Each structure stands twice: as C-alpha cells, then as structure tokens.
Image (tube, rainbow, N blue to C red; front, side, top):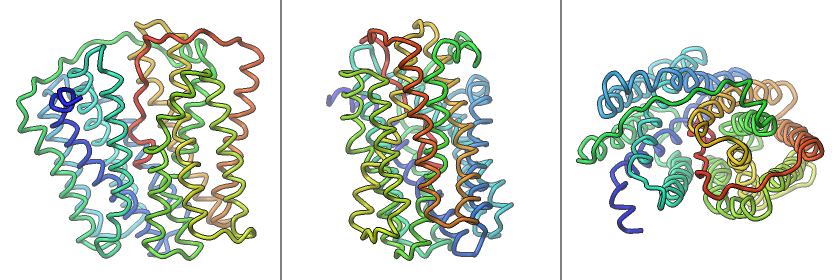
Length: 401
C-alpha cells in the first residue's frame, strides 16, 4: 500500500486540493445566490450550467490533451478555472454566474480526465482496484471538507472566492513538479449510445436517473437547509453529510453488489432512497430535529451515489472488454444529461411549491427507477459477474456541480 501511495501521491494530492476548491465554490455560489434573493429556478439553471460545460468539455478534453500534452492541458485549464473563480464576486447576477459556471465546468472536465489518465497509467492490473478506491475515497472526503470550509470566510465575499481560487491553483503545484512520466493518449474503440442501450438498457436508464438524482439534489440540499431556517454551520453540515455518507458506506454497498448482484444492489439502494426521501419530504410535519436530518442525509447520500457505480458495473458484466473505455465515456454523457436537467427541475419545484418538494422529486425519480429495475429483472435474466472487470470510476461531477 505504501508503494501504491508513493506512486500516485502527487496526482492524488493535486486532485484532493482541487476538489476542496470545487466543493467550496459550488456551495458558495449556491448559497450566495439564494441569499441575494435569486429565484430558485435561476439557481437551478446556474447549477445545470456547470454540468452543461462539463459535458462539452468531455467531448474536447482528449483533443486538447493530445494537442499539447497532459501538463500543459492541466496548467491551461486550471489557470482558466482560477480566473473564472475570481470573476464571480465582480457581479452577482444569475445569468452571468451561469456563464461562468459553464466555463468552469468545461475546464473541470479537462482537469479530471488528466488526473484519471495519470492514475490509470500508474496503476497495474494487480492494484487498480485499490488505486481507484483510494482515489474515490479521498475525493469524497475532500468534497465533504470543502462543504465545511464555507464557515471560514464571509459568504459570497471576495475572500471566499479567493480561497477557492487558491485551492484550485494549489492542486496544480504537486502535479507540475512531479517527475512521473506523462501517460500516453491512446485511441479507443467507439461505442454508440444506441448500441450501449441495446447491450444494457438498465445501465443507461439508471445512470441517467442517477444524474437526475445527484444533479437535482447536490447544491439544492443547501438551499433546502437554508430555507427551513438552519444556521450556516448547520447548512454546511447537512450538505456535507450527503457526501460524507458515500465516504463511509459506498464500499459496503459495493461489496453487496459483488456478493448479491448488481440489480439487487440497485434495487436496495433505490428503495432506501425512495423511503428516506419521503421521510425528508414530510420532515416538517414530523418535526424531525437537525441530528435526525444529518443521519438521514448520510444514509440517503451514500445510497444515491451508489446508483451510478452499480449501474455501470452491471453494464461491464455484459460488455466485451474492448468496449469498456468507450462505454465509460458514454456513461459520463448520460450522467451529465441527467445532471443538467435535475437542478432545473428541482429549482422550479422549490420556487413554486416549497423547499420540501426537493425530496418529493427525489422520491419520484428513485421510485420510477426502482420500477424499471423490477421490469428488467423480469424480462432479462441475470448474468454471472466477471470478476476481472475493472472497477467503475465515479463521474467526477456527481457531487461537485
């Protein structure tokens, strides 16, 4: 384990620092807009703009990296992200901030592909699962800590955005100073969306639904907390618990997926999300206290974020190995589409129907996905899990928009 950490330390440290900045920036933007009286549907559009930029960036990232190399691509896009971050406090306007978030999303797509390429280059078939496990765990921890950093600076001021920019730039330093060789950019076999759906309809629908859930809730959870009268510290704790739950429990859900089956794990996770979302929707009438809300957020967040992992693993069980890389890219696209639509819908619901309808939305989406899992269970038998299939990587903007 020490040798593995030594081989990936520079890349790992870089991505953790940038994740800290990304998480803090996302929460700062959302809460600042809400505090300024911006309508909830506009806040949802700003959140969706990040996913839209990330989606476009995913199409162009490999071209940029192939043209100028990993280090230059990372330096270029990180500098762009820092400039965009420092531009936020110059004009507090939803339309302007949506444009800035879209540009930031584009740069983030390139940054994350650089990091993931580097990690995969350093990993071997013998330790790849552990490398990706360390990577995912450290990311969720950084996302949680980034939420709590909101308490260190005045909300929405220049200092808050300066701290975000500093963390983003700090993540560049260990990577550009490392002596690790740059990974090669390789051509990968294409796989159309139609072909992927034909191979695994459940995976495509579940990944898209996972984007609808994660995109709709992340960021808007903080708006919910703010609207029900929680303090800034309580807002950050509740929002952070949603991600920290994945840090604590995702490995356990993954083990259940390996042992009992992908669709079984999906059904379990979606059932838990449906039930807990209904509880959250009724939390006002039930008079649930803040500690109970945090515990629910821990469990709900872990199961919600596991939907992507179980769905992609289900597809890998059926796909030939030469399609793994292309399928991963396609799943990122499906997830991004869901992440774009999710906050737009939840923003409208919260603006016109009230903050608790955020959870009514989550319960509806997860229940519909659960019904689709049951349908696919009936029409298509399970397959034997291929234990040599690679561990699926989480979509980088599952919780960082």
